[in-house]
Amino acid sequence: MRPIIIDEDTGRRLWNSAECATHIGVSPRTWANYHANKRTPQPVATWGKSAPLWDAEEIKTWHQNRPGSPVKNHPTKHGVDINEP
Image (cartoon, rainbow, N blue to C red; front, side, top):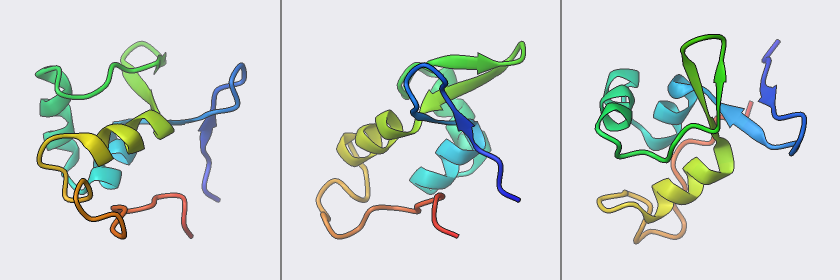
């Protein structure tokens, strides 16, 4: 079983911090530092009291365009797709 979070209003996939970290190829701790230093997009929702959630498509676009991104100048490299089995 691979549960996912979908926003009921928009139908968009939401990622938690671990999924965001996996997608951009960093540790969850590094993602947490990026977020704490306001270097990530803002979360679109919160799961429970303290678990932020990000729009997966927004994270993919941000990662592709962010300074230092390994995929920015390599259109054939798209990072890790956590949606693949």
